[in-house]
Length: 581
Ligand code: ADP
Ligand code: MG
Picture (cartoon, rainbow, N blue to C red):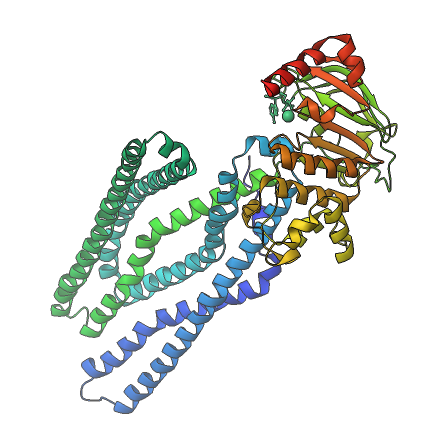
């Protein structure tokens, strides 16, 4: 892919004025830095060369000017440091918001493949190095260019042959610098990999600490960790070695250049082709010639990391949601809740076997059906087609007689409520979590929803009632309590279609019956599909559908299916005997 330079530059746009003033300021301060040694030269020339005709007044004036310039230069640098970084940080903020908003739009299939840790590093580290490049890049290049070219021209005018003698060192220094830049970069990359290995080890081991302890395998864990920790140390040693060689190598070069100036310059003084003031000027300017080459490593790393960061950013920005609304998509204001699967087929990916093939099923508005069958049969998958989390790969799925592909996704999902086994609650208060179902709901509506979900009483017994913080993912609540909050959330949403995906499967008998009662209340008057693990919980369903890997094997009421003595009755009696036995 060609580098999207236009897009890269477009992020400067909102801050262009500010950034240009930062660059202008950097130009001024670099020019002042360039003038400074010239003033030193002026004074020293006065003092040294024209000893007899020394006009002390001139020295004072020049000294005064130098003080003014110093103050100006540092004030300018203050502006460059502060506002330059601010521009970078603002651009980084914009990119981050854009990336996050884009991630929110992507379909489930994207998140099936990407690891959260990787997405996290895109949103943090990658953008950080990008912001560094955005502001430091142009600032540094300009600063070093002005100083390098300026110093070269000035020195050349003062004494061409001494300038060329100094200049001879620079290509050698450049090659040295590039070579060690490569080694250093390699060491830095390795180091990043090693540190993430250490992180992964800690995460894995501490995350599974219950297993570690129950198998009494602490020593194995310590041994594995120390292995990673030592490899991390080795990678650090490599960085320090490369850095030490590089920095001291550069210093050696600088000292050699200085010595060349002093020795070759002195010989010129002896031959009266240079004076002491010029020699001092040379010594002051040498650094301006060396500095950019010394910084080459740093700047090229910055450039590389920043551009990689941008490429990674664009990779996600260029990922289109797998499911997009078509341009005539409708937003239904209300729906009846009739669901028709018409000979549908579905596979998660082209190269995978279909999970569902040629399945037909109609659920009437307000009907209460149960979906049962072995794990892996495709029950969850089938239900995730209804809100268009995934798109059918063949056949049609109709809601109220309209193909779901004609609905706007968000508009459709407003009318569908899902309660899952694995409840996800957000860090925040009870009230915030319930009102997630309808952010505009009043307090009275929130309390009513909680009552309907059998949650009001336990909420009132929490230390701060509805304002109690529930902790990350609701760690401070029991499984049944979390489930009741998630049901209250759906009550508030008031959808026409309900999907309960093993909503009570992980609960003990007592909380199961409380949760079941609130689910039954929620289901009244809505089309409901219940996926159940324990068949005893769905006996009262109007229709029970048995799904296996081949498709729907049988359907009917609990009674009729038992009479049929087929797959359902086999499953039912197996559960019954295991519960009573
Ligand atoms: P059930 O809910 O009946 O237990 P699922 O619908 O969860 O079954 O899974 C049906 C099949 O689809 C399984 O073989 C499972 O491995 C596969 N599957 C489920 N989710 C995904 C996914 N996101 N990507 C690929 N395959 C999946
Ligand atoms: Mg499932």
